[in-house]
Amino acid sequence: MATFEELYQTLLAAAVRRNLPEAVRQIKASEEYDPKQLDCLLSPKKYPVVWKLAECDCPGGTPACVEACGFDAAAPDGNGHIAIDMTRCTGCTACVEACRGHKIVAGKDVVAALEAVRNHQGLAYVLVAPAFHGQFSAQVTPGMLRSAFRKLGFDGMVEVALFADILTLKEAFEFDKNIRKEGDYQLTSCCCPLWIGMIRKVYSQLIPHLPPSVSPMVACGRAVKALHPDALTVFIGPCLAKKAEAREPDLAGAVDYVLTFEEIREVFTAAGIDPSTLPDEEKDHSSRAGRIYAHAGGVGEAVKSTVERLNPHRKVEVRVRSADGVPSCRQMMQEVLEGTSNANFFEGMGCPGGCVGGPKRVIPTEQGRENVAAYGDAAAFPTPIDNPYVIELLRRLGIETVEALLEESDIFTRKL
Image 1 (tube, rainbow, N blue to C red):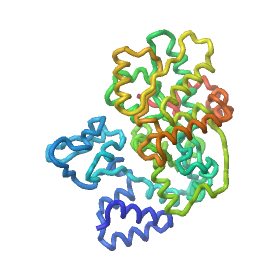
Image 2: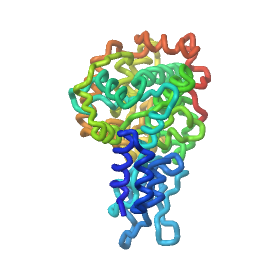
Image 3: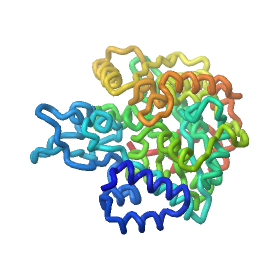
Image 4: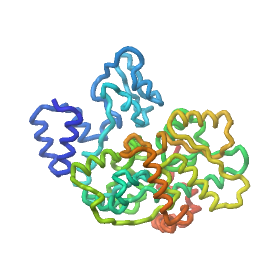
């Protein structure tokens, strides 16, 4: 019987060679496979983002996955097994990393995504998270990565940092409008699905302090589909929780598939693609503010600098308090509830170090932070206010002024 990993590698190789249907026929004929595991890999949207390969058989005491879960999603089911409550699960993968028996695995969408790109009749775009810089070797420029995705069959690559620019501008306007006196405060509402999940599921009384913004990933997917209605969109990042976010009922449809940096590295290896040897199709559209979203403290710094550009004479300055990692975020939320912090803008990142510390990153967290900081410093524009591409894109989307970002929008707004 093939293991889950062996089955995955076989299907991945077949998808890259573009002979997946024949490979599936051979696998089924061999009968040396688990039918449910095969279906999970071929049709991942039918299953949760965290899969149970088999029932757990942990020794006495509290199972490691239950102890690791910060959202009470993994719990005994009364029959001696562990059940995962997907209404509570945020896709953080803590249970996957804690499972000593390797009975719980993170969902893999890559086989289905590659097949969708191959069969799609319209345009196919890859949307790359701001944490991407340096993940596929220090020598790989954004332009080289764009060339690599073209070899995989994509028509183009969009840096999600440009949409982080737009969401920074939206949250800066929200802050400038609503935070007018001491005691007022705002929670950042974009970027991290673990942070938003924590607020919605654990600290719901604080929802009124969240601006009604989607994440840059969702904004990017919606914008691409607004401009190209037949487009297929595939997001690439370091975070499994983004797979769960893309499936949320009010956000579904913006992003068709979410793949991780680990999955893309496996694809490049299977396809024999070395991005560092490919042409540099450089395009530079994002500001420093959008690029630094990927590391802890980046969102707060981006919003603060943008508010100061919008209204340099504000009486109430932006005072940022940031936290990264679920325990630190919980501590910060207690400070908010108890009124013991003098900050008025709170930023939370579910992973230590921020997105660069995501569980599906390829390089160490600190190296990722350094790469993102350097990429931010190399930007031609410091804030989205200074970025002409932001204005141009908003107009193409039918938004004539940046101030209109405060209005409800089908692209940038969600109902919290």
